[in-house]
Image (tube, rainbow, N blue to C red; front, side):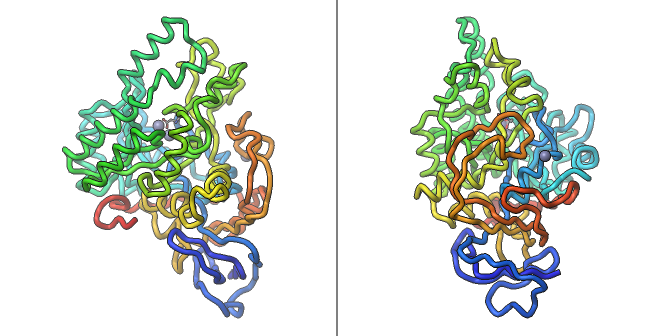
Length: 464
Ligand code: URP
Ligand code: ZN
Ligand code: ZN
Ligand code: ZN
């Protein structure tokens, strides 16, 4: 089967131009004009943009008590054709075996988009660390450690992070960190609760900006000492972003991403009455508007490489799960849904507002995430030989973000009521039309693992 996407404007991370795209089977076979003779079917994309399927390098299916791949149709309708998902290592199971088990039990037969897996070390023993060099055998080239979450199994102390960095650099595995100072958070939470400050408006006070900046800086120092690359997930503010910016100016391979919500929602949302603030509890917290504004500047200038959703639709949603913290903000399960909305939000509030160009949009939502995950140029690119994951984007569409039109299968949308401009009108996934005008047309289990190549990010092979 061959399909010609005709008359559209192709947008990549470096340029935009008018040309037709020929899909043969699952791959992009040719780009140019005069390709009609090779096509079984022609799709007209006049007046539309044609860009690579979105790659969301950081989200949670199953981890942190979130809904699983049964809800991954939401990604597809939002124009995201590949997700980067985090695999929690169960106690007593090797790091590598945890990937094999997870794929079999939680993903195969369910995934509706392609996925690349990242490991999470839960058992910080030498046995786990020694598994790191074998992760690429199961398609994994990034392992995350959590500097936050004191008292939890996945809480990683500095010794584990340092050891992981030392081992990972030798085999091209990227160490990712959730950087927040867990000890300070622990003290702050206890002090706030002791003072009777239990409401959601206290949440950001319990995890201040400097907590994140300090942990980011500590992680960067550890990376320098280990002479290893580092990737910091969900950077939320200027202080933390500047740590990374300065490190890179010095030649340290320390990179970061931010997320849709940190670019569009500020900490005032946590003050909403009737416990509505709980909908916006995610880690690290939402920040003041000046940080929101700074993050746009940071992605525009390449100080922050990519935008993920950190989609984490907790089982039980707002009505049940979030309400566990009705008398204690620290018991609210963190996370917000958002995989379906990422491209549309970044287009509406980035491109349409003149904050970033269309090429930068493709760069931060598709191309850089694929590089970060070690799956470029199979994913995140419109080029001959790349997977035919293609979005035909209608810039004239006008709508409103709402949980009603969402396939997230939860009970709220963090962007409820926000104006939407532009939409992923048609989404091709390895050559098949899987979503059209917000409707999912694909099938469960169509998603496959994309095998991450080591040295995807940072090293000599990394080209921005
Ligand atoms: O609040 C968030 N981000 N929930 C998911 C877990 C994490 O730390 O990424
Ligand atoms: Zn569904
Ligand atoms: Zn995190
Ligand atoms: Zn996360």
